[in-house]
Length: 252
Image (cartoon, rainbow, N blue to C red):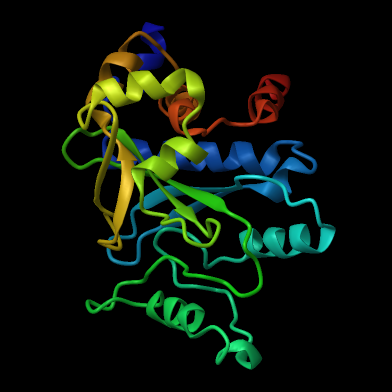
């Protein structure tokens, strides 16, 4: 355990260089893993911010599989596009023949591209697919020097607001976590704040208790985000496919 901690300047904290390395290893796991059909509904991308060039991880997954095969194809195509994260502009097209019938959809789409500060926005309502999905992002917290999990719901059924803590508990939080998260309150539980890139309100798991959870583990930096997600992600429905760990062990 101690030899693994020697890889870090100050375990379990990460500086920017260590976080960049952890992101690269995590991305490699996803690329190399034999995920099969899971890769279509669970996407991991290593990204960089436009302003600083710092790395972060983006994870997208469908909240439920549509029964109709055509709807599934459309939903998977949407997840496959590069423009559907918390900090990306909308990559979905608008069917102009339906603009008059659904002006609200058009307004939601066009307003999602940039805000008044010129920052990119998350995607809005899509005329082509109504499959709900969640976007998770892992950023390094500048104060706590720990990864922080940000997340946002998208394309919920008509009438349901995406930025709503009740929707988070309904769609993401497993039953066994609900009472504990509500009791934790803002500190140590689900919080909301402007997204670190877009300034759009988003949810995140407060990192203050992550240090205590990680301190009892010792892992090489190539496994850091796997361990961290195992501790921080399950409360909001983020689980890493077992194939990502199994393939790594077989390579050793």
